[in-house]
Image 1 (cartoon, rainbow, N blue to C red):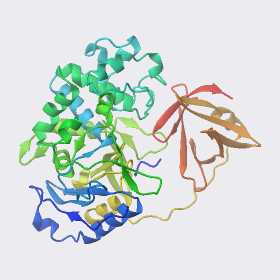
Image 2: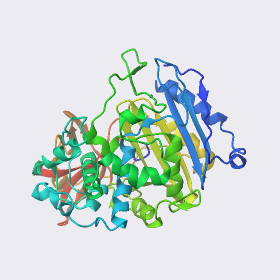
Image 3: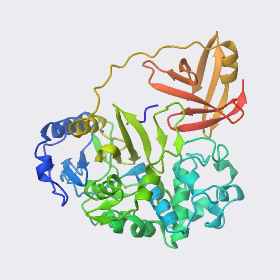
Length: 463
């Protein structure tokens, strides 16, 4: 599984100093090549601008904005400029849930119906632990209520029925933004105030993240990078009007900067301490970073609470990425090395992976990249083909595995692909083996689930 996760950019680079930058430590590192890499990748990916920060120990080594905040105004990006994070928001929603638990206001393993009235009977039995570990069995694709009214979060979730689930809670990891919308409602109900206000009180103010907000009307009062898509001429164009839906805030809508985010990251890397103060408890940091759910098909990857744990080039990382309309974000933290990199961009879905690699190479002892070799094919017996075959559903997504001419195939998005088995329950397909599928057994030992692209699907029909 690929956990390791876009105009010509003017050579405008604006550096805004951050109060925690330690010049003596950063002076020995030449960041010029990193800046060149970032600017080149911005041009290559048709992305107007980006901001990047590198954190080590309890200091920001480097924080800088490069490129443009808007292709219409040519305003330069700065390190204080706000971007919308997308799903990187999930680590903050999860941290707030754990903070409420540590205050004794909620139990992570108790039914959320104890705290949130008006839910359907089945939904009320889900636990906060299951929601923030993505093991609640909730679909990712529940249609959200579209609204600018902050009360929409509760109205939307109280309308959900049993078809919100693709399987029973607690059975398997499957990425679900809908589960985080529900976690946001839990925060709102337990805190007794709107979700955005609760997040400010629980996290942003204690961390000194003074510009971070969920509300666009607050974000626009600060320097703000505007969101872009790539147009028909393959150049970035401003998204107008800007997208906003209050019902989705809890899973992907924080506006923040690399400078503000660095404060959370420093606390995370230092057992909750920031500027000599204990702003988060060590146990909160440990809980969100722990491995709570195995990722099928990848022994080195686990999901914590709003964080993905994985191994890359010999280093254990904890982090999360995010895509939003007009934006992309990535935070990767090597906790054992007390080192992290933050990248924010203002183009839909772009996170500048080459720049992330270059930044990490400057400050971490990464192993050399291994040569990509074709994976060895493992034979599939006739009886195994029968066991593996079936229709796997995560509405509206469906995968069908079937045997044809003595070979195993998958049908997805109306296309058929031959499967190559590379492990006992792991398969790849595509010209370069770029797509992966893992099968997962139920408690009875039979194949019950398919896992692909962070989503699980339940077997609903055997073939």
